[in-house]
Length: 493
Image 1 (cartoon, rainbow, N blue to C red):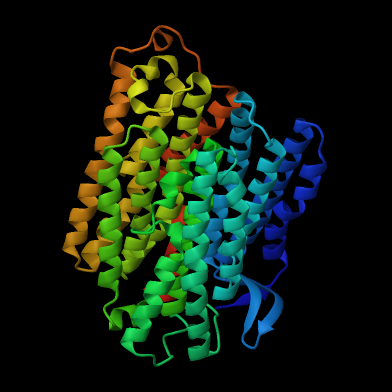
Image 2 (image 1 turned 120 degrees about the horizontal axis):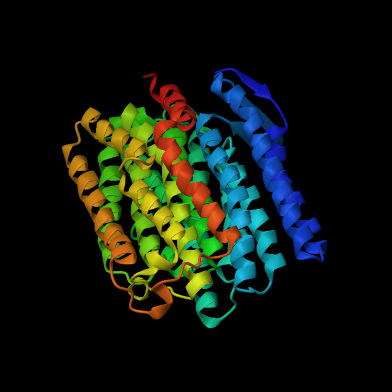
């Protein structure tokens, strides 16, 4: 694989980090938000400028400093990192616009602090995407944990502080207690932490029990992936403002968790090692349980954001499931689902927030007939629901199609049952809400004969992301090509 050295990965990370002093010093909200948009646009353009190089099969590297022999704080932009960075940087622009409508619409306090930590979170996210080794990934993973804590506890009430403690206990406790020791053991075995095409542990000659232990420590240590049983922090974090929930579920936190798991499976262990020890079956089992249980729990939720939280828990494990299949099409489907799920799920959270801004309603039982008052918002919700279910005309169909093909390719027939059942469950908790919103008689007069959407800054972003979800069915090539390039580099197929 050809590589070139460029400072662009570092610049992509630093843009939103360096903008925070300007945000803090901005006295006027308009100035603060202008700086946010400028930083978001510059970050996206830097990421986009590296795309042609990556599509040519060339990796971009940049080393900051060597920490210990064989391990440096280093960036490498490959196809998988580029896929994730494109999603995160593009959605930051849209989420920033949505944040203005939401935070101003509800007259939220401490908006400067909110935008500052939002920017720090995006720096950490891009740092994870472009990490060349396990140490660099770990450092930015921890940075993200502490940058998002003030966002989770934004309201500063008892519930927010309790949820924040739970968030840190799960996220930081597992990374320090599991990932850090696993890194030390891995370095002792190999003398490196550099991600490899077939995993740097592949030639270590370690025993199956030791490799199995490291696999458990690294998969569950990145608890942001919300794999059961380390998932309960995610519904608890729903006390945060809705733009934060959208950030947590679609762009940064949970995607960083599942991206880290994908990096571990492919860059630390490698498909050949996992196949030789038959660990793919264990990964599939854990992911399948999370998918089905998360979907069943979502059925019983009345709070809209809690329903979306359990839906996210299930959807994240599609990505782990795809990689765990260890088949080219399955891995492609898992990686593409990072993008497809992001645009669908962020739309759903934008809709939940717009409903709250316009009506003050949080529970589904209170929203009967709301489609008559907020037809644009609920139409976008319907479109995004189709994407999460995996139905045309939305991009979610593409990733689930590849997962089905991957399960056939890997001769894993039970996975077909999991995919079909979970899609039916997705429909079972989304479609009744959509039906009642449009076709049932409103319980409250406020929903009957008046159209009153949320402010434009709330509505326009959710329309954009819903439309992108549709476009991705007909033009998935950028993400599909990046995923295919990554899989080809790993498997040679």
